[in-house]
Every structure is written in C-alpha cells, then in structure tokens.
Image (cartoon, rainbow, N blue to C red; front, side, top):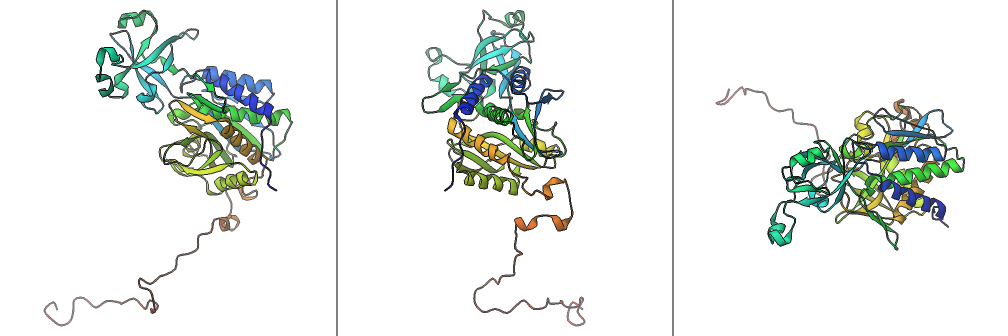
Length: 411
C-alpha cells in the first residue's frame, strides 16, 4: 500500500515560524541585505556552510556522495516593492514599481520608506490621487489605476517638496510594502510577499532537517538564495558549472483558467520562456505519485522564475519548477500549510534520488550512442492518403516537359 509522505510536526512548526520572520523583514529587490543577514544567521545556527556573492546572493552546500556539486535548489528572498521617482510639491511621493505588479494592488498598502540612513525608516500609505469619497464622490471610481495615479502619503508633518528634503528623503529611496502576515485557524497563510519567502522557508527547513540528521545525499547539493528574481536576473550568476539538475521553488498560480492547487504541489510544464526539462519534470511527477503527494500540472503564460535566468546565463543543466499554491500573486497573497508541506516532502524525496540519468547526466556532454533518446520516443511520421479507401502508393515524380517547346506558338 502506498504511503503518503509526511513532515514532522516540529519541522512544520519551525518552517512556519521562520516564514513569519522572513515576511516581517523587508526585502524589495535591490535592498535585500537585512534579509540575507537573517538567512545567514539561520544557516549558521544548524552548521551548514555558505558563502555570499559580491552582490549578496547566498550559496550553501548540503553534503553528498558525489565529487562535484550536481544539484541546485534555488529560491529567492527578494520581493516586489517601490522606489521614489519624485518628491511632490504636496509633500507626497510619486513611486515606480520594483518588479512587475499593478498599482491596483499597491493602493491601500501600508509601507516603510527607507532613506540612505540605514538606521531609520518612515511609515506611509499608498493612496490614489483622489482618496476621499467625501471630497470626490463618484470620481473615486473613475480615476485610472496606473502608477501615475497613486502616491505615498508620508506619516510626518510634511506639506511640500522642501519638507520632504528636510526629512532626508530623496529620489531612489526604497519603499517596502508591509507584509502583515496572518495565520488562520484553517491553515491558510495570508500575507504580502509569500511569493519568494515561502520558498525560502521550505529550503531552510530542508537544510535544517538534513543537517540535524547528518544526512549525506547521493549528490552534493547547492541551496541558492537569490536576491533579484523579481527583476528578472536572480540565478544568472553563482551556479557551479557541474550542476546537472536545478529545481527552482516559487509560487504556483491559483487563478481562473489555471490548474495549480493550494493544498498540494504544482509542477509546471512550461512558463513564458518555454517548456521545462521533459525528463526532470516527469521524474518529479512520478515521485509525487509514488510518495502519495497531491500533485497537479500547470502551464504559466505570464511567468518567469530563477530557472529562466540560469538557463539564459548559460547554465548547462536540466531545469524544473516546483510550486506552492498561491492565490492573488503580487497582491494580498494566500497559500496553505498543506501546500508548503507537499513541496517540502517532494523535494525531500527528490534530493535523495540519483540523477535523472545517472550515467549520462554525470558529465556535461557525451557521445550520441550514449544519449538516452529512447526515453523520449518520437515515431517517424508516415505518408497518409488524403482520401480513405483503396489507393495506390505514390509513384515516380513527373519529370516535367522541355522548355521551350519544339512546336506551337511558344516555340
């Protein structure tokens, strides 16, 4: 009888507590040093060695039997946010998005504004230009919802551009949306910035479990935590050349017309940049079935992950995406603990398996005779007549006639 994979209650509790700490540490793409300090301290706590790239992405290694680092588990700690574009004459701030999201989902958000002073922040609220129904009536619902029609109201006595300058605010200051996480009685987590940080919490829980149990995996594995996924180039640097399999962990799109699930794991077959690796994605699907993990497939049309950044940067690895179900991505997001657990259990199983093709994938290239093409059959097409019934096989091609003709008006 098939046994359903499970996560120890202590590990699950630790993962949730860690997620809440991550969510409450602001980290819009471009201003991520504080969250990376937190993540580094966590790795230190359970003795997993790691290093940081020049710009601050983190790479940790889980021990394995292989001589080289053959696998990579990639998550991102950066989030969407805003940046100050203009100090306005009315004492408010015009902002642009950091990452791709609609001003509709920013309006009403409480924010922290970070000046160049690392020890200070100022709170505020993103509001439409016409924010009071008592003043504007129906015009409230008629105004556009783009970024030029919202502004940040600063929680200080400021009424002019000069007041903002005296406060120390400048063009280029970061504005972080406050996450305000909630954990419901039914196991839902509702918050901003689950996109990214839920994946980080899962990766940290896996690293903690393997470290505390002194597990030596079949293959040395890099856990990579990127800091610029939301702006498109997260995993573009830092991967070892030997990595043969890369799995990016990110949100799965729960929305009308999609097939992602909030109470299990979703394995996307393709995103905006094309199909994920055929063999690795199907291996993950098989593992989910074998482990009794609720699983769905999906295809994402308007989506990019760290996997795309790695491949575009030249990584010669198989790449796949594993998603935790997320409703309302880049807005007020919601996931469920069951989905986080399902992703954890699938990755826990995957990391303890051999490479998809143990012999072939051990090297970056090889001979055609060794290529495992039989695992992806594509029978040759055959000639089919246009009409049903009796037919003669195609004859010799007509050779045509000599030109110009020897007789007639065209001779």
